Amino acid sequence: MTRPELSIVIPCYNEAENVRRICAAVTAEAEKASASHEIVLIDNCSTDGTRELIRALCGEDPRIRAIFNNRNYGQMRSPTHGIYQSGGAAVIGMGADFQDPPEMIATFVEQWRAGAQVVLGQRRRERAPLLLRAVRRLGYAVLSRVADYPIIPGATGFGLFDRKVVEALASWNEPEPFFRGMLVESGFRIAVVPFDRPQRNAGESKNDVRSLFAFAMSALSGSARSLLRLPLFVAALVGSLAAALVLAAVLASFLDGPAAILAWLALAAASLALILLSIGLVAEQVRLLVERSRNVPLVIEEERINFPASAR
Image 1 (cartoon, rainbow, N blue to C red):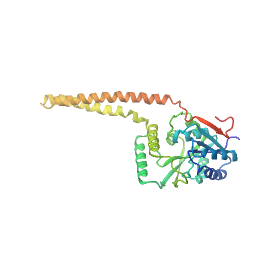
Image 2 (cartoon, rainbow, N blue to C red):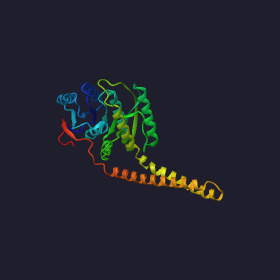
Image 3 (cartoon, rainbow, N blue to C red):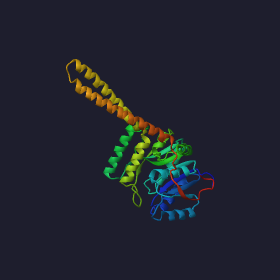
Image 4 (tube, rainbow, N blue to C red):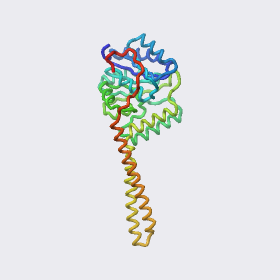
């Protein structure tokens, strides 16, 4: 099979109740929207029979391809690896639970053909617990202030990416890819399509508190590396305070003021500034080491099905 016009990448983890239905829905939409397509199912070591269903689907339709990971690599590495292994001129990343509506495929393809290199679905509203919505709003507010590049609120990673974008991001070799942030950081032309996110079709969400916290920390560290320089800025502020206290101590000595107390405070501030400066310099070196040592594979594959022999 030559390179398809469209690849749809669907990560799976214990999606036995959804995988057949999502493939049928995606196939119907992709056949209408593109000249040719493939579906890449990347399974993160499911334990509920999802793999057996995927094998059956691959046997029924050669356009459905499968990657089986040898363990669970989490919700950032596995989907990103699937996107990098796809072959389409454009690639759509979406979930298996129907919260990313297959009906959006045609709209994404239309925006891509009109010149957008990245098309992102932006969640308008979602039926979610009040606490979860509040935490998300807080997270977006924090990222908007500290991130190294603009963050698009409500963009979950559901969207379409041009082949040029996929190849550019794959070359970065990010060991913990915050993919939706990388899309913005790369500077490609982005179109945003708002949509109302429905409830999960079947099965249970795999995002417990622990996984959501891990994802948030990866997002923060991946999109706000400048935070590593925060101790340097604080050191500069504390150092300025120490200099001001020294000046105040000198003036106090001529005016019979509390010169000794001010001198001790200046010494304490200067010591704190030196400590923060040392921490900041170490953090900056760590940042540089991280930037230069991105060599970890996203996943280790156990098996592939229906991929051409020339595929990576």
